[in-house]
Length: 123
View 1: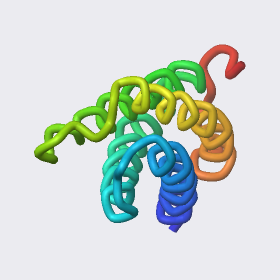
View 2: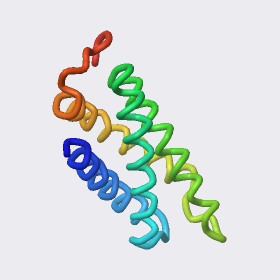
View 3: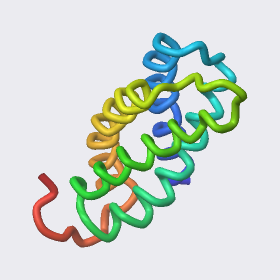
View 4: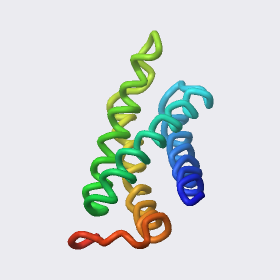
C-alpha cells in the first residue's frame, strides 16, 4: 500500500510539472501530457526510487531521475509525426522534476523505506 501511495504522489507531482511546463511551451494535449507523466512516473519509480535510491543516496537518485525524465520526455518526440518537444523544453521540465524528486526521495526514504540503512550523507 505504501508503494501505491508513493506512486500516486509521484504521478500527481510529475503531471502538474509536465502540465504547466509542457502545456505552456508545446502544443501537446492533456492526453499527451498524461502519457508522458505516466511513463516518467513508472520508470523513475522503478529505476530511480526502488533500485537507485535504496542502494545509494538522494543525490545519485535525483541525478538519475533527472536524466531519465529528460530521455523519456525527449524520446516521446518519436511517437508523433512532428517534433513537438524541443530539447530545451524537455530539459526545463526534467530540471523541475529533478527538484521535485529531491523532496520526494526524502519522503520515500522516511515513509516507504524507513528501515533501510543509509549510505553516506543524504545531503
